[in-house]
Length: 318
Image 1 (cartoon, one colour):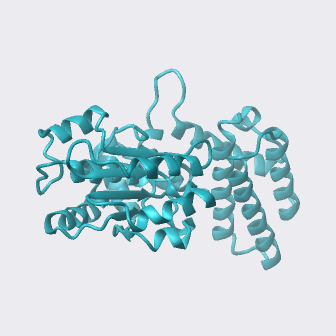
Image 2 (image 1 turned 180 degrees about the horizontal axis):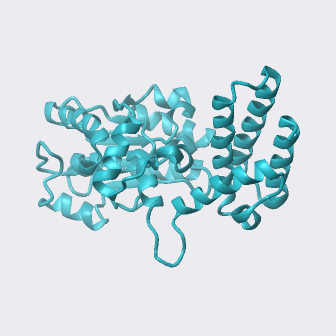
């Protein structure tokens, strides 16, 4: 499975509406053959997709989802239902050979004489050839077949793909809703949502709070980056955790720097427009670099961080 199910859809209140929308479609017999779950996995998009798949493949679904007792549910829960398929990226992309093999398997008769269900996780990773190979199957997937396309960034999907799917409705939870959820499920009393955009969403934020007792949690590392970036921008020299940042940590560290620069822009109304524009450009450069580092093979992390500190100091004349 792609997702470690620390949480389930029932424990995520912001998924109540999309969950009920899908159940209503199933109960009224008006379920389309292709569904787009445009919900980031950090908000439960993959969990919702798995819930939908389990419910759709169940032979005796209830008003709450799959029954959990029929043979189909038992096979699904055991991870070996022969009519359930999952596709995820091979590296950074979902490749055309994966889709061709998948489409070929869908032409076979269902082994359990029920519905066939497939999830394409992070479908925005479909490369152009793979997306084109999927089009015909999206239009005509065959009898009693449900295709679920989950996407962390649905806006980047090709229009030819998204237009062939019915989108599950979803409204992002507010920060207050996320705070309340964290208090209930993680016993968090302080406001930790400042780094929500760094980790990606509430589920990953909750997971970032966990520690094995030997290494600091991801959240503790983010707090250290925030403190050390602030000090580094003030002194002109890299401080603390930034001196030992690793390949696995650099993207988090840069995203924290972006948040700090954004706060500078919001709070420093005394600065002239030209200085604010330069800080804005620096923030954009930092964010662009954090995106490109996901595919960049090597980079001098120490030199990169120091260059941003020096550029900030030059802009602010400190």
